[in-house]
Image 1: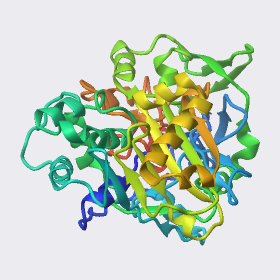
Image 2: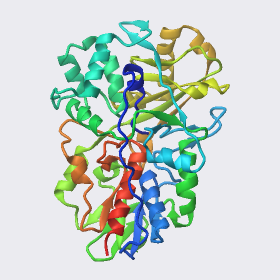
Image 3: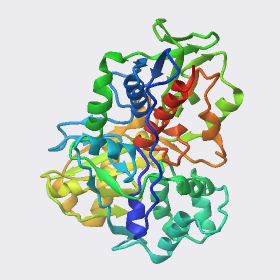
Image 4: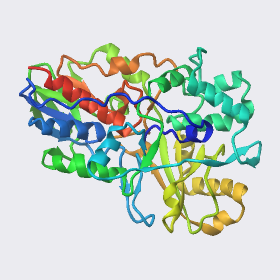
Length: 443
């Protein structure tokens, strides 16, 4: 799961972002000669491990689950092609994962997200209302206006957008939450930091395949699965890491690359305790429930994505539909909507969603329906949510949370990205590289 830009493509035409320098490579002639343990085999942990491996440093990766990838996950058999149940799109022409693919001879395909159906005032419209476009443009351009640290929903209502709250909800869902939980101020502030570009890409195979093939497979001898870390003792120069079975592992440095929820819930105990400011910062970074839904149909009765519906924030019509037999609408359901679906169960949720689509398109929906697949990331025991977002009062929590402790413990993962690229695979990888560079610069 990751930050998406497809709503912007449908509302704001043109414009681009300046290319910023890609992170420099980890130096192979580093001063550090010790060992490193990485906790978590998601994008951040794998990329950190790959860079340490390339620098001829000893590394061990401890992963709690039975597989690698974190919020990257692949499913075969449901569609007539493999699908990503987590992160699916490369966001930005400057993303390091786009460069990874191209360096390996893989050409990412540009995805064109177009909302040709907008549900507004109980009617289907071909485009979003002009006034809402202006509201959305004001958020993304920032102008000179100072946005208040109130929820995006409250801000929209303050600006007179009560009639378009379903569209506002779609904006919030794009960031991983509900409109009444997302800070208008920090949402706009972080938009300005995004430096990866404004284009989206998909891979002919899956995003999971790319990361698995080029980051995970070379590290396979160093990855230990089904290893739930419960305690880290960094009271001595050598750090001891303990798993739930009491087995201990020793290293000079530890990179903690687990979702922010795991740290918030105290699933890993630290001795001595982490600085209070840091643990408080963990708790200020929000991460809500998240579900990725695939709705499969025998034939195509829709053209383009759908925005403004109430059961889910939007339905995405992907470009792959044009080249495969199975047709699919995808929805990324976050925050309160995800909590509601979790509470009623998948069968009832499917029924309610099909009823909503039938209101839009008629009986053709049920005539062609051929199955639904819910990936509920909240139910994954070592993930427990979608991805981080900017809640009210978040302040500089990401900066404080990402600080190394005693130059022994380093934190990595999308929630710790300070370049505006949080919520993304490449943003997570950037933090893994930063941790590696900090380690290799030490004696």
